Length: 120
Image 1 (tube, rainbow, N blue to C red):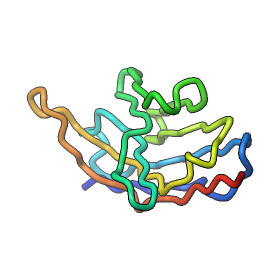
Image 2: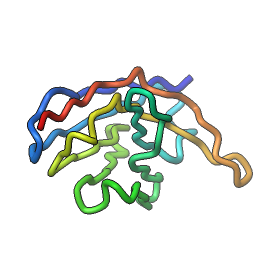
Image 3: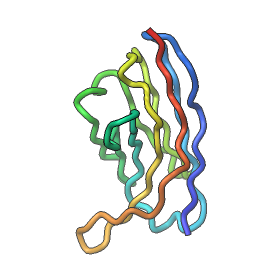
Image 4: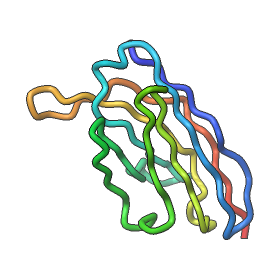
């Protein structure tokens, strides 16, 4: 079973940067996509960025040009570099791993979440 361990959240001032990490273990060969989602109080969880095993990426419009997702397949780790942070980026950030099952994306695991707080 895939396990995900996140790190790197914290408190930062607007305009600052943070880097989140998510290390996967167990069942890693089944993983295709790894992504970051976030959930702010009172809001639904939303996709921030996702990267597949072959390096294809997609981003939420709200973070394009500011956030960069990357993946080290040798370390089974995905990173989210967040620059030019805004107060509206404040949320709990969750790592996610998925696999492709006959063309359908199946979630394998969620991380425990890490808090990112951006002060104005």
